[in-house]
Amino acid sequence: MTPNPLDVKTEHLLRDLAPQVLGVLLHRFRDFSAAEDAVQESLIAAANQWPQEGTPDNPLAWLIRVATRRMTDHARSENARLHRETAAAAEQSPFVIPNFDVDPVAAHDDTLILLFMCCHPALSPPSAIALTLRSVGGLTTAEIASAFLVPESTMAQRITRAKATIKSSGVRFQPPSSKERVERLRAVLHVLYLIFSEGYTSSAGPDLQRTDLSTEAIRLTRATHALLPEDSEVAGLLALMLLTDARRTARTGPAGELVPLTEQDRSLWDQAAIAEGIALLTGALAKGSVGSYTLQAAIAAVHDEAPRAEDTDWPQILALYELLRRMSDNPMVLLNHAVAAAMVHGPVAGLDLLNALDKDSRLASHHRLDAVRAHLLELAGDHTAAIAHYRAAATKAASIPERNYLLTQAARLAEAPAGQATGKSRIKKP
Image (cartoon, rainbow, N blue to C red; front, top):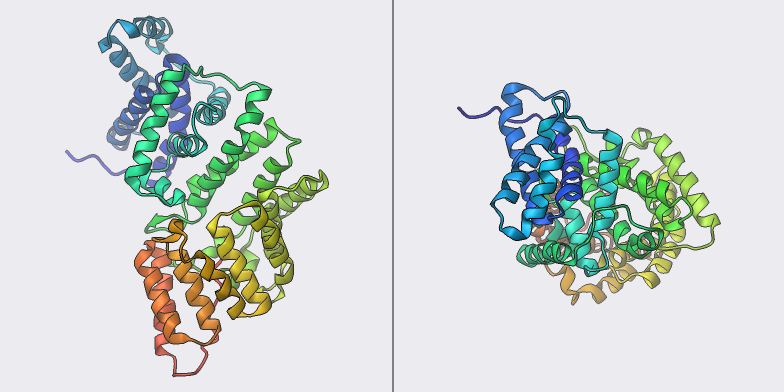
């Protein structure tokens, strides 16, 4: 009989619990690949059994029990090199305890340890980030490849090599020392930023947002901030997430369609999140050391503090992007800088800045360059070229809401009388 499909709540629960289960297994068995396989098997078992039997009272303990059984079977089938792990597993096996339980706080701590473990210096920064997105963030290989602007096959190889490196390096699953936290922090923050970004605007699929991912990124960033409260960039990243996520409810319409920033109902924005984000940002700026996440948070704050779209302080945003450009060669930063320049100096100035990105291989298959160019061409009055670029962007967009939005913009311009501005063009910001 075909099992009943999982409801959304249970899907989110399994996603939240997966890194915690992985952390427990790594703590006991120290075999990354085998542990991840065991976690996936436990998730499959849950997907097959829970719809029929009901969600267990302690779902985390249930998943750990099943995954541990898989790991124990794996250990027993290995050669003599794994006998020590098999013996350790037998000593700690949960099956000798009638009511196996797990401390939720300790499991959450394991998730944070897993985060820092995946960002171990034995790995190159790109490999560390990719592995963490897969193991802690729960992103698919395709989603990670999209975030890195590389082919999926390349990312799959990178993740496989990272797991092998973790195993061969003998990295222990334990809280990082103060020195290790400092060494790994940059990669950790980048991972959290990418997890949040994928959750806030999904790279593919029917939904614009994946709240489970953005919420998990915020939770992990809070935990990192609690660990390093004096680090201004950790505070800046948390502020950026809160100030951006505050707009979440207003970003989609009744049918899940994308609502651009300038058309959003700002009364729906989460004022408590905005207040918390601004307080964090103010504290970070007071420390005097300003990094890229703090600057992005400052840009988000300018948007959030404008009561209406037309009240947005674009000159201040442009100045902040010019500072950010000096710190980062990220093409998305350059795209947003071009938008800000167009809002201050006119669309031609923005289009001139976009020309520098035409040969950037990282954007060759990405829809954002065509989307931004289409908007600026529309502002400049070249509707024919704008329509072509809106349609080109739509063919590259894997997110259905973004694709529909771009096609709608092209159709709107195509239906407008020749030479007449529609008055409905909007900067598409998150």
